[in-house]
Length: 235
Ligand code: CA
Image 1 (spheres, protein in one colour):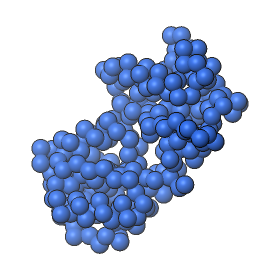
Image 2 (tube, helix red, strand yellow):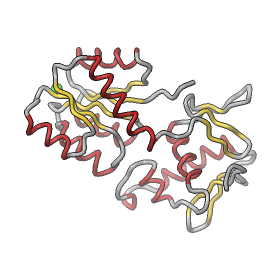
Image 3 (spheres, helix red, strand yellow):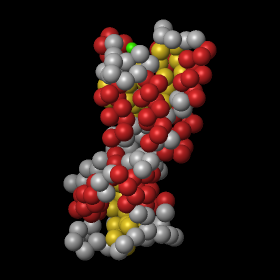
Image 4 (cartoon, protein in one colour):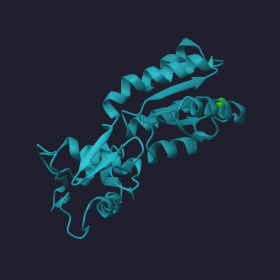
């Protein structure tokens, strides 16, 4: 029932990548991977991860640039850089670009796992949703992304949980689409992004949490302003 942190590992050497994936799966992580900087960046910006392990020497876009681009969009996503380059200058470059930590190859697996744990311990406090979210009449187990107390539980996506979590943290006011895109999706300049993305997610969420998704009583639209969560948990 504990929360399974989700890692993205960006590494172009198949053997190292496979080794890392095995290790973190063994330690209870959910693991996704990318084998070049371009794919890594795309995944990092479009999906939700708790931490990224990022190699420096990568095809198409190097790890420093990937780190920099991620930081332009999302200040919170923890990044640990992995590299054969261990000169002081590289470490400084990585940390200046916003990496949370840095580990030189060859690294001991045990050390890497400990570093990941310690960065997560620091950062999950600010990003991790509470274990159970109550909205309307339903309770959601955010570790398993599933509705609780029912025989036929609704399944939620991580993004949906994050939307609910964010709205729940701001019960006193409507939250605009732009704000959701910025805070939940991590876009820094949300006006350039299709705001319909938000509407589509909201519509999907309503089908899961509302008795009648056409007449929402929980996930409310505040005209011209955004969305607000009404729940008996709200103060
Ligand atoms: Ca490499």
